[in-house]
Image (tube, rainbow, N blue to C red; front, side, top):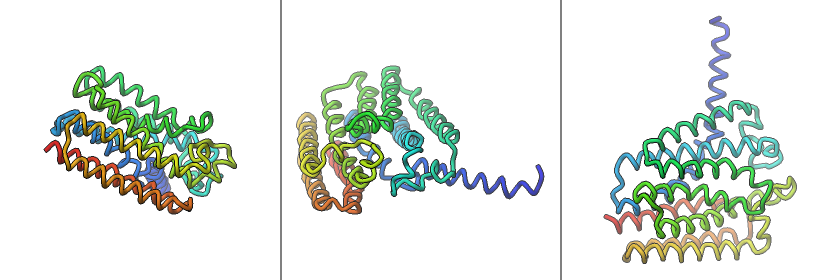
Length: 295
């Protein structure tokens, strides 16, 4: 190789690596947390508090890989509109750090790695993993066709819970569907807060969201969703015969939801985003309650 080309190659590789980190949101772990905590709720419950190391590894790494893949396909789907939204105008496919071919290659590699993990599980779980992939791929495109893309996102973020129970039980019990429903509703609530940040830009470019659909009723509907989440999580606790540690976690969760309502009261964009980020603590608090109960 010509030595004069070495610095240019090094610079190009550095650029690609930087683009990879940005498009997979390695610098913004909130999405991983919001996907990981509910998966841990299900994994601990399905395993009676003692998930084996193999399952813990598969589901933990799988969450990271599929969240990253979801971010990549989202940027690919939005590559022609991200430059029209202030928050996303510097994303890698807009700035030129990565090409669309780069994005599709990264997506394929992440999905292949995730599928490689899943092949170590039972056939039933592998079949369910196909549904997870379809949900992850379809979500970014739903913003063009439905006012409820957050419902698809909720299903995508919750399907790992179904897989965890399927792997442990060989079936999907009622508790799993209650957890799934709670997480779907919770996802709609916090992603509506997230969508409130971009609502003005989304209206201009024709992107659909629950924030636009709910309109002036957004805060009330988010509050109703949060109450339903608490009710479903309470039902899970009743089925599992949980005691005060779990119920205390739900009280703290109710407090966090109330704090989020205070943040979004004036629909200030920065405060709405802060409320969205606060949901990391919701997932963690509920997990701690489940973890203590199953010790």
